[in-house]
Length: 295
Image (cartoon, rainbow, N blue to C red; front, side, top):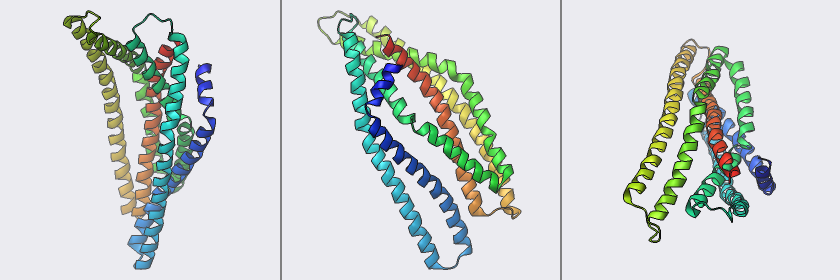
């Protein structure tokens, strides 16, 4: 694991810039949610066209800043990730020069695993901490605004993680099988079109059906997890909508503030989903690290 981390250190300057840009993007995104709710209340209470125009222009500027930051981050991500993947491949070459396994199988295996490890780190090294900060900031705001709605919002957190825990082992096992089956299939396919290697249709078909079966099992686990998550979210959203609607009818909050709370609730769901998906991606990445270490 230590040797993998050293590869990422070679691009530390790019990671610092990406971290700063990501932090700015997250802050602007959170503020835009609040400002949209503020705009709704102003639209209801204000009868002055100039005031509505001023707020609209500010909201447009905020949106353009958010789009610009996202654009710059995406421009930086591709060359940074490709350089790291290339470094992993260079490292693998030294181990594979005298390896007697199929060349196509090894090249596919190294490329898949290097990309999985690289994208897991790049996608999460900053996001992991930003999401924590974002959840804390939302929690402070929501609890100050409406304690009951806040409690309902955060009930979803332990339920979500309990669901992930049920699927954790299956995710690791199914992804390990799918990765091996993929590498074997591509190697067999290359051999099938190589006139120097004799391979009959039955052997090729068996490898394909093994590959297909492995992916079907992986997709089944993924879809079962997705279904469980979706059911929890739908139930909690319905409850929060009902309680929030009653608060508006009773005059305890405004429509704009309810809009802010609902958007922040969706952000909480997205952030908790991120950590669930992070756990899932970590199980997949563990298979890649294990396979890369075994070269």
